[in-house]
Length: 245
Image 1 (tube, helix red, strand yellow):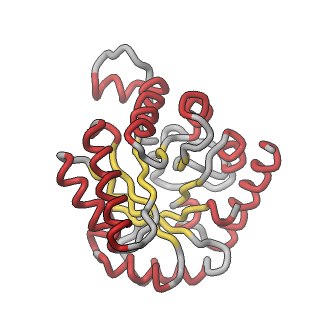
Image 2 (tube, rainbow, N blue to C red):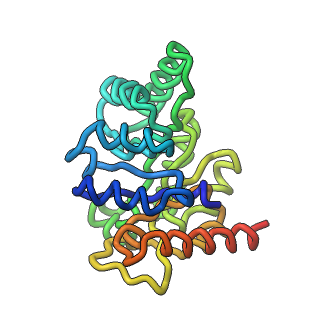
């Protein structure tokens, strides 16, 4: 299970990022780089992580016209990242063009293709916020998540990013082969200041529901002892996996 934990490094201090990676060496092998560290440090932070021999989830959540997203995915592939995120709400053509561009780049360079993950509905949103944003629709939040997950699957994406509350619904609609990456994971005993996640579960619950990977940031990087916090989460993930099997 420790290979299924992705630690989010949404930090603006490169020294702190290096310290956390060093403190988690040997138990965490996958990290997420999003807009904050990439804006501050660019490709240097990706190179630093790859030099550590770990996997990288490149989480810029691309959402633009199809050609722009396709070229961006090509560029991200050149960095050697392992997962790339893009918004499913960009539509089928945008998603499909990204898949084609990524696979073509991998074939031309004889390199592994990164997995493309479709962002469904952000875990900071709840039902009321969704209605405020889009108005009254015929779909509930969970129905919209499943709709977008199925769109990602039909366009050829490898997986989706979705809250733990929609995992089982996605599995039922899209099958067992679609990779589900789940943020919004919290240990009950860890209080996280400024938490903006609305749809959360514990690591055990999320894995038991069927998540393939868990993304955890603040409960680890803001912990007094990040290594101990990561070990707690991995243990819960193992408990969830045993309960599932």
